[in-house]
Every structure is written in C-alpha cells, then in structure tokens.
Amino acid sequence: MNRQDSSPEFPRPLQLRAIEPGGTPRAIEATAAERVGLARRLGILCVDELRAELVIQRLQERGVIAVQGQFWARVVQECVVTLDPVESRIEQTIDERFTPVEVSHERVILASQEEDFEEPIAGDRLDLGEIVAQCLSLALDPYPRKEGAALDLQDHEGDASGLDSPFAALVNLKRGST
Image (tube, rainbow, N blue to C red):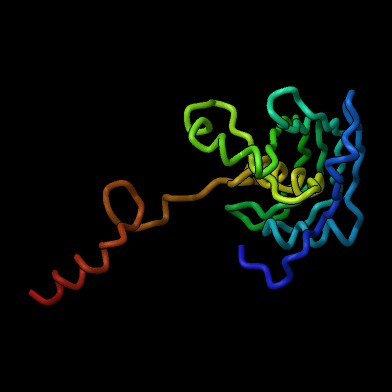
C-alpha cells in the first residue's frame, strides 16, 4: 500500500540493547488514534481494540531475536456480499524471529533451505507495534460475510454455470455482426 506518511500507525520501538538475558516482557495497546490509522491502512471499517502481550528474547543462535506472545483484536470489516459491517474477534499467537543485518548477510543462502526464516532488521531497534500490525493484517478474514448473507445467482443470465463469462459480450457482438 502506498502511504504518503511513512511513519508507523502503532509505533512501539524496543532498543535491542534493552533485551534482558532472560527475556523482556512487553504489554502494548493501540490508542484510539492509532486504531483509526491501522483501520485506514488495512482497508477495514474499524479497529475497536488491539493489544498484545509479548516476550522478546535473544536466542543463542548467532544473535537471533525471538518475539513471542499473543495479540487480541476486535475489528469491523465490510461483508463481501451485503457491504454491511461484520464484527470479528481475533486472538492469535505471535512467534517471529529476527536477525540483525550484520548476521543476516551470512544467513541469506541458508535461509532458503530452512523452514524458519528470520527477518533481517537494520539498526538498533525493533518495532513491536509494527510486528503486531502485520500479524493482524495476516489474521483478517479476506472475505468477511455477515451471518446468513449469500449471493443469489439465480437471476444472472450468462453461460451454463449461471455466471456471466468475461467474454460473453464479445460472443454476443460476434453473433450480432454475422
């Protein structure tokens, strides 16, 4: 998505040097203004709630940083059939891995062979809010439907399946010109 303002809607930066040896717990919650910005970015009607409880730890594997925990959200999307609002509750686990850029260069070749890929991070901070926002984006229902909403395909004229073919107009034009 092409945003004019490149600042994140839900910034929660964590300095990498602040990660404690046993792990660093963080509880984060989006403000009303941040939720409005996230809804706009995600192309949905509303984000009523977004919060997460995370633990950030440095793993023994060559500087890999793990962000683990859970997030909760309440969102409102448009029904793909009726365009009515559809409310959803989302509760998901987060388990992401990151590698500082200086380490990730040597891991690029290995990453394609591994099942678990660590995302490279540049600089000295990790944005926990952006991690949660991206996880929320992936958790959204791509085709939300209001309960009981269904497409009525009986009234459509077209090919044998009852759906208009994208080429039906061309066939009709050809028939009319002969």
